[in-house]
Amino acid sequence: MPNEDTAMTNHPGPGNADAVVGGALGWLFLLVGCAAITAAALIPAYFETLDVKQAREIEAIKAQMLADERQRYINFHQALIDDDPVLIERLAMTELRLKPVGTEVAQHAASDPLALVVEPTEVAIQQALSSQSQMRSIENELSRPDLKQQAVIDVQLERPRQTRLIIAATGEYRPILAGAGAVLVLMGLWPRRAPQ
Image (cartoon, rainbow, N blue to C red; front, side):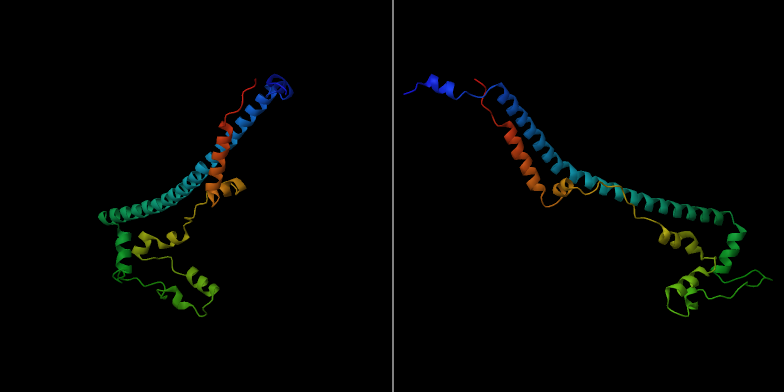
């Protein structure tokens, strides 16, 4: 019957190289596990930050449009206070349908440019709208719905391209990614036998 000393010499315990490899694997498991947990936690938050930034820039464009409109109203009010003769004459013509004595109206066009459309095609409608008189009502001049329609409000931010990691961290596999990261961290922290 062999004694314990001979059994130990036949099967030696882990050596220094085994400890170094085991320690390196432990650190590798820790790093990969922490990276997976971090990706599952921070990537969705980063995309939410981009959404908030995009919404903020859209609201900044709308706020600038409102500030421009407010400035037009302030200028209009100041012109009324100053009794601007051009504005008074224009108000008399557009709002009261009065013209100065001894003058004639230059053209008698329909007030609605779409009333001149003969065919209901896109080209005919665009031609009628482009031939519209440049003189707008005071309300349209101040609120400028044409500028609001032409304004580009859709802001596109540069986003990271969709990789497998981003899809896993933001989609339905997010809990699995975080769980796998936690398992890898536990494997990295698992105690190992010390060399004898």
